[in-house]
Image 1 (cartoon, rainbow, N blue to C red):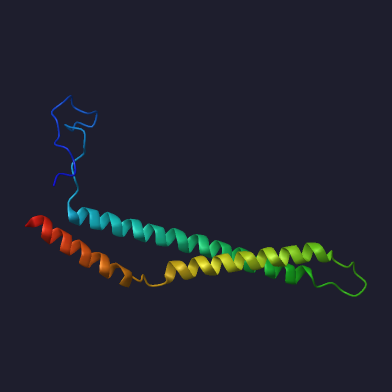
Image 2 (image 1 turned 180 degrees about the horizontal axis):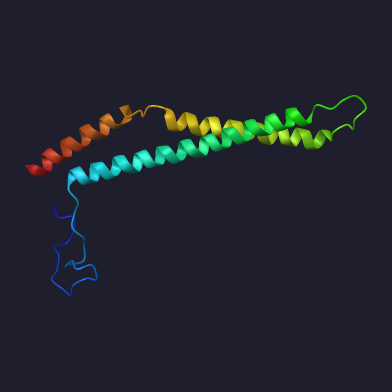
Length: 127
């Protein structure tokens, strides 16, 4: 079975390679690039999750500090305070959800039937 058509000898590409398709990477390089990509995605997810979580907690802290007023002071706008509480709660919820997703172990049990199917098909193709 041929997935890619054979390369034709044509004019050299600007990168100095012949043919329409670049050279395939070996398995070790592909695996290493996949691991680096996974690690970068995890770092970005943790950073974004911490940003949302800390922003929400800072908002709660600011609301707590600004809500303390001595006797005889003005009464804060209830609508504004409720909106800020909801938005801070939403930020905390989103941050916890992102961190939970980024830090949980990967469940690959659902891939077992796919692996079995792939091995059966590859054996039949070889014969």
